[in-house]
Length: 187
Image (cartoon, rainbow, N blue to C red):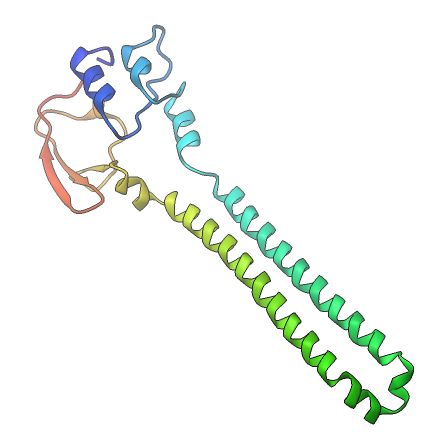
């Protein structure tokens, strides 16, 4: 069935990426030759197509930790700058320090604000990128790329077309909307 010419031609002309995961076949069906990716089993195909959520969460945690360390380093730098200012002889007379260092402190504060803002902007962009990546991996995004979910009349997802019988009613859910279908034959 997976070397049927009409099926192979349809798969070859399809713009949506095709994953062939027939599995445990002694010979190599023609569908494997036109598929964008050939997996040895359906389980292998699922592992390749669906992202590892634990890895995605670990990546987000790494970004969050890196952002925290950067912010902490910036705060420590500014605290060191303030400590150095306090240790200068001019600090013995606070009024002199206020007069002399007012502009310096204002400039440091402005620079600190700009630095924090720039750092936060960079980290926000990184987080937005990760969020966009996670959204692209969602089931809805998969359906937006042309895939559909086929369910039996009882609401169970159809994973094996060979178990269907002629006349079975199916519900097909696509990115936008649903449709009902009746099985003509299964192979």
